[in-house]
Structures are given as C-alpha cells and as structure tokens.
Length: 167
Image 1 (tube, rainbow, N blue to C red):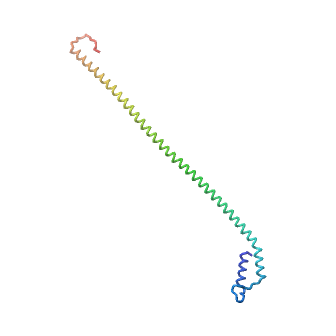
Image 2: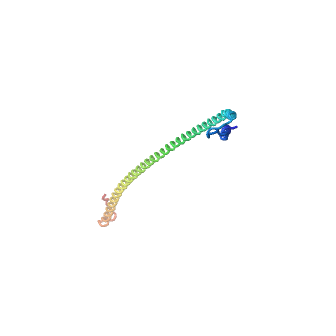
Image 3: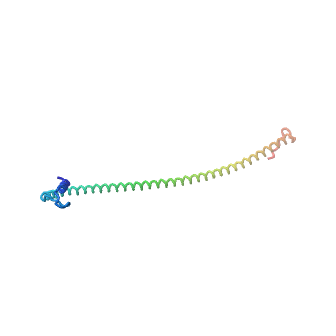
C-alpha cells in the first residue's frame, strides 16, 4: 500500500475513534492496530523516500542541463549580437570611407575639369592670336597684291616688260 494511503488510513482511524468521556480532543484507539499501521508506514517510507529523492535529483539534473543549455544559447546569442554589431560597424565605417573617397574623387574630377578648361581656353586663345596674325598677314599680302595690280595696270607698264616684285 502507498504510504499516503497508510497515512489516510491512520487519519480515518483517529477521526472515527471513540471520544474520551468529558473530552473533545482525546480519543481511544486500538494501540496494537495503530502501532502496526505505523510500522508498515515506516517500512514503506524508505522506498518512497528513495524514489522521491531520486526524482528530485533527476529534476535537479534536468534543471541544471536546462540552465546550462540556456546559458549556452544566451552566450551564442551575445556572440552573434557582437558579431552583427561588429559587422554593422564595419559596414558603417566602410560607407563613411566610401563617401569620403567619392567626395575626394568628385573634387579631383572638378579640379581636373577646371584645369582642362583653362588649358583648352589658353590653347584656343593662342590659336586665335595665331589666326588673327595670319589673317592680318594674309590681308596685308592681298592689299599688296591689289596695290601691285593697280600699279601694273595704271603704272605704264608696257607689254612684255617685267618688273621685280616689291617684296
């Protein structure tokens, strides 16, 4: 019989025992029956206590294993969090660095454009001066040619007579 059933049986015997005259708290019980039930309870208790202790130990082992697993999961989560934060910091740092590099490249490209524009403008100005001088020289040459032609036709040059050019 289960020890709890034996305890219930003892309680039932005491509750149904005949009361002592003139007392509400005291009762008469069969001493032999009560001692026999208590011996049986004592004999059953070590087995049940061992089983209860074993169950408690098993529960403690399961709780410890669960606690270790929880700590491992938390440690892995913290490590993953640190890794992700580190990766995020690297990404943010790389984005800042790339923005800086792009800014420098744009500034350098603008500077080079300005240098090229200045160089082209200077080259075109020089070319313009050269063309202006060439045009002036061509114009002077044409003016001389026209002047010579006019002199030749009005200067009394006779047919077949050649004169040296004035230039």
